[in-house]
Image (tube, rainbow, N blue to C red; front, side):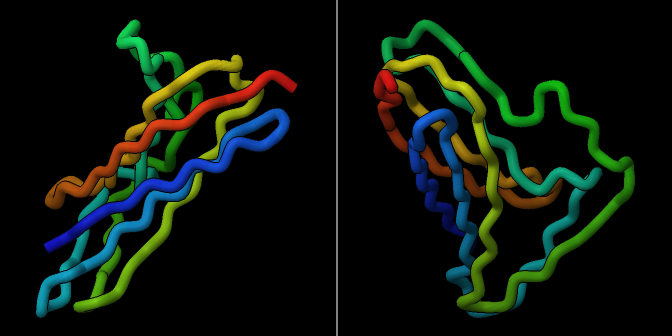
Length: 114
């Protein structure tokens, strides 16, 4: 069983995202990926006005199949950065990009005026 936690760290001119996926099961899990992307980060306006940023937008990923194995009790952390965010209240979702497993987490955060 995979579980996910998402941490956001607002800085002066960017926000760091860390999605940690942990295998809480008793056996190893092999995750299959369709390309080099391992995770996705999506930020929406906390007021419900829709998506304001997506980590993968404008990025190119190597088109190669890949896999990662998570042993029982092991975790992996994936990182992303949102540059120059507009001040406001947001909801972030971090999602594992595996083709054969689901793990996602959500958190609320604020970006203050600098």
